Image (cartoon, rainbow, N blue to C red; front, side, top):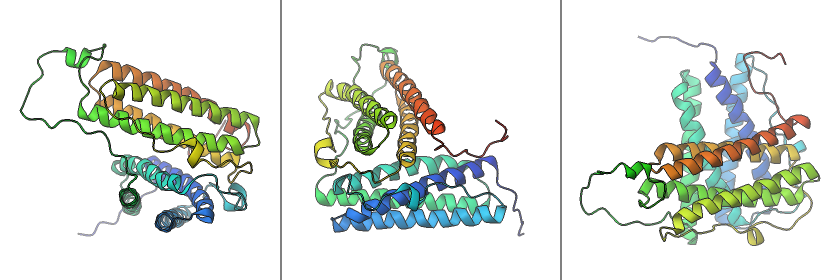
Length: 331
């Protein structure tokens, strides 16, 4: 039996599409500038694929909104938000890590949204986005392996026998004498790399903006990223585990003055990274069984949330924050 059921968009579906449109229009602007300066042929193919996927997503969302009578958001526009005459801001290797990092964020966003969507066309689009994120992540990882720059999480010993925990101090150990378990190591390592990436983005954005307020905000963000990175490094180093730095300010951020991107785009981009970082920390809390780790992650989340709020206030003051779908549109 063929049952026709084509209801209006739910709040989950509307919010998901609206946010995806913002993210993909931003990505098109960023990738357009990256492709102006890319030299590595393999990374160029990856960027072109990422660009094509974002453009496809934008077209699908526009069609759904037009059909539903939903006002298509402004998002980000190449004529307003990217300066193609500006010199390159980041290295080719940064571009590679950029795609991998954004694919990681897409995996989280699209997988969280999927269980809340029911309409067939939205489920199809959501699944396409999730598949796209997997493709980009795997392609970026393969290029890193081929170039010999893939930085793997630390190795730990294989278990040789089955053991059960008999002391509650396994959870309530505040002094850190209990060894880190595998998932805790993975999350520490992943969040260390994310903060390293964020510090490079902040340094690049800070040197090109014409606004002192925005520059100070990015420099403050870089300081927070480096400080939080050090927290994760200390945990790993205390267990004699490696703490690599994948990107470096002095080699992956180019010393230019003219900004490739608008302040609106840079502020939104960094806010999106903060949002993703809070989600990463939340996942790490849920997977941690050492109370000192949980305490530190909780403290770091509050620091990022306060910083993110300050960034939102800057965007609102400057008219850069586009209102998302809401229950009521009265101020």
